[in-house]
Length: 234
Image 1: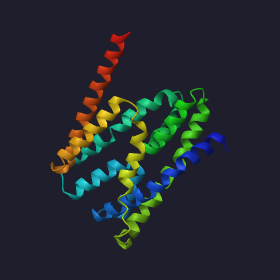
Image 2: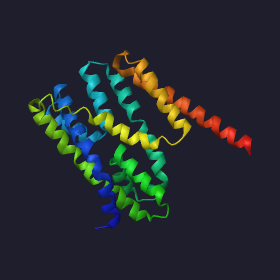
Image 3: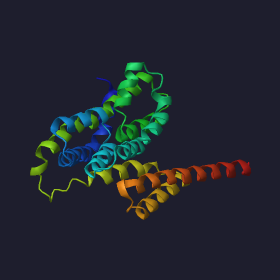
Image 4: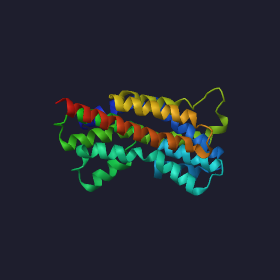
C-alpha cells in the first residue's frame, strides 16, 4: 500500500470525529422530513455533500418551492466549483477515470487535507497525489454512508441529550479558520457572519445566500484594493 495513501488516511482520520455525527444527524433529519431509508441513502450516495443535503431536506420539510430548494442547494454547493478550480492544477493531468473518482470524493474535508499537502510539496508525483487524495477520502467519505444509515434507522431512539447538531458548525469552523490567511478572507468571513445574522428572519434561508454573495463581493473588492496598493508601492 502506498505510503502517500496511508498519509492521506492518517490526516483525514481526525475528521471522523465530526463526519460520523454529521452523517447521523442527516439521517435523523431526513427521516423526520419524511424520506424513507432508500431515499436517504440514495441522497447520500448521489450527492455526498452534507451541507447541501441538509439545506435541501430542511427546505423540503418547510414545503419550500422546488426552485428555491434547487437554488439554495446549488448556492451552498457553489464552493465545490472553487475547490475544483483550486485543486485542478494538482490533479488535472490525471486520467479521466481517476479524475472522476477524485471529483466524486471532493468534499470539504478531503479538499482541505489534500490541497494543504499538495501546496506543501509541489514536486509530489502525480500518482502519489492521487494516492494521497484517495487515502484522505477513504475514511471520511466511506464512513459517511453507514453514519447516515445509522441515523436514519436509529434516529428516533437517539436520546435528545445526545445532541448531534454540534458537528455541522464545528466542521466548518475547522475548515474555514485555517484558511483565513489574508485581510480579504477575514473581511469576507466577517461580512458573511454579520449579514447572515442580520437576515436570519428571511424565509427559506435566503439570508444565508444573500450574505454569501455579499461576502464574496466584499472579499473580492478588498483583494483588488490590496493588489492595486502593492502595485502602486513598487
